[in-house]
Every structure is written in structure tokens, then in C-alpha cells.
Length: 295
View 1 (tube, rainbow, N blue to C red):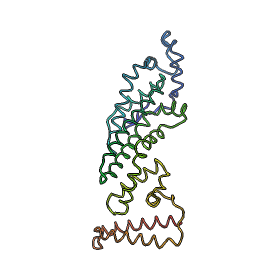
View 2 (view 1 turned 60 degrees about the horizontal axis):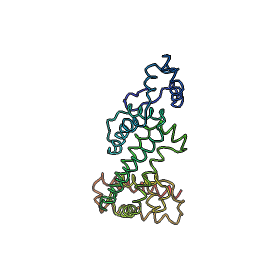
View 3 (view 1 turned 30 degrees about the vertical axis):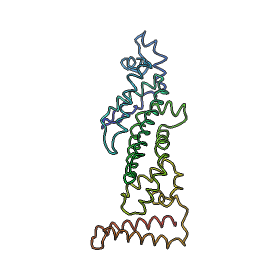
View 4 (view 1 turned 120 degrees about the vertical axis):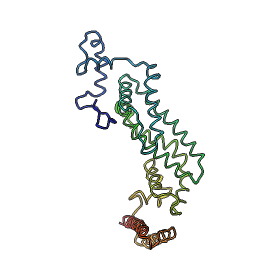
């Protein structure tokens, strides 16, 4: 295995045998290695001895899975943008050896159970959140989870490649995204959507970046949710509405004028050039969106 300059990511060198082939050599050549001292072809003597250590079910439950579980807990709890100092080398090694020792099925089951329990807690916390903080709380939960997947999925790359894709004909990232959809988003979409529509009609109630993050996230989870609020989704997802008719252009112009009035009423005065430029930029973006839809 080869380490990158940042010491964060590890990958197989091109001359390293694929995991199934390596496992086959370990399994089929075990007797020769232990008795003759010649080692396994293509693998050093020390590596052979290291890989030949059998991982029992008890070893997996008491040693290997707890290490993986601890890393998952840290990744799921980190705030977006934070760095969690975990040993990627150690986690990759744990996953790799468990796959070679035929513990993939149990490891996959444990991973899905672990994340399901986490998401159930997230859903319960959202359920207890007051309406004024609900949107921000949902956005944090969604961003935090999607950020965690950027690390969790690569950590389990061997399990994904040689068990989930091969035997289950699925993909780990898709499975984990579906978990969030089933255990969080599906349970809260009909509470969240009215609040988003209300926030949309009340300028500056939430930041545009928060609104964009949630809308794009919901579209990623389940594109058919566009039908719940087509106008809202169309502001952040291009080309989801049918082309506009020429007769609708006056409505777009009226929307732009209303936006400019809202900006003026909320402090974007003509005398303040920086605020004026911000208002012009918002108005321009709205016009571009209308023009693109028309085309």
C-alpha cells in the first residue's frame, strides 16, 4: 500500500495483487507457507505471516469491529469542515483483513445497523426541534451526514468492491444515502416543506446558502419531491420545469420588481453602493433563471 503526502489516504499500488487474488493466495498457500518457509508468491515473508493470522468471529466482534465502530462514531459526529484525527491506515487495514477472512457479510450488517441507529436519533432530535430552528437543524443534519459519507465510503472500499457490488449488486454510497432518506427525510419532508415555502416568501428569514443546501440535498435524496414545490426547486435545480411560455414573461418581470422592493425595504438603500450591488446581483440572477427557463 502507498501513502499520499497528506498521510490521509491509502491506495493499492499498481503492482499489488487485487484483494480476491491476494485472499486466494493466502487461503490456498497457507499450508505451504507455514510448513516450507518459502512464503506466498509475490508476498514478503512478514506480510505472509501477518495475513495468515486467522480472524475468528470473536476476534472480529471484540477487536476489529470496535475499531471500525469508533471511527464511524467520530465521522458521524464531526461538524462540516472539521477534521477528525483517526488512523486511516488502521481502518483500511481492519476492513481489508476482515474482507479476506470472510467477515464481509457481518461487517456490512453491522455498518448498516450502526448508521441506522444514528439516524433514528437524528430523527428524534429533529422531531423535538422548534419550528424557528427546524430548517437550520435539518440542514445541519443533512450536511453533517453527507460529509461523513465522503470518509466512510472510501474506508469501506474493499467491502464495497468485493462484497456489496459483487454479491449484492448494489453500491455502499447508494445504500447509505437511502438510509438517510428512509429514516430522516421521509419522516420530516411534510413538516419541512411548509417551513421552506414560508421562508421563501419571507426574505432573509434564512440564508440563501442554507436554502440552496437543503433543496439540492432533497433533490439528491429523492428527485420526485420536486412535485411538492416545483417553483422552489426550480430556483436551485436547473432545467426541472418545462419551457416557459412567452405570455408568462410579465409574471417573471413582476417577480423581479417585487424582489427589488423587498431588498429596498430590508436595508438595501440606493445610497449604499455595496448593498445596491448585492441587490442588483440578486435581481440579475433571478432574470437569468427566468431567461434560461424560457429558452
